[in-house]
Amino acid sequence: MFNWLKPDPVKKLRRQYDAKLEQAMLAQRSGNLRLFADLTAESEALWQQLEGLMAQRKSK
Image (cartoon, rainbow, N blue to C red; front, side, top):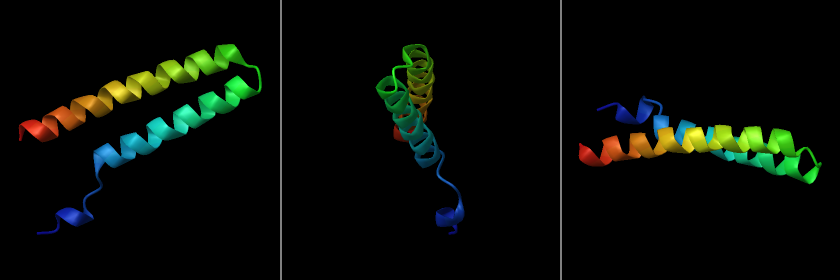
């Protein structure tokens, strides 16, 4: 009944993923390619978690 009160983990991960990508873009624009690579790797890890959650949701 009160499912709308529970936080959605997919939305939370998506926001984190978008924030990491934005940070990576800003690092690339400032010329810090090492930081860009690190942030991109972190965002890819978040994307893998996000895909896993979405696959779990589809299987239910």
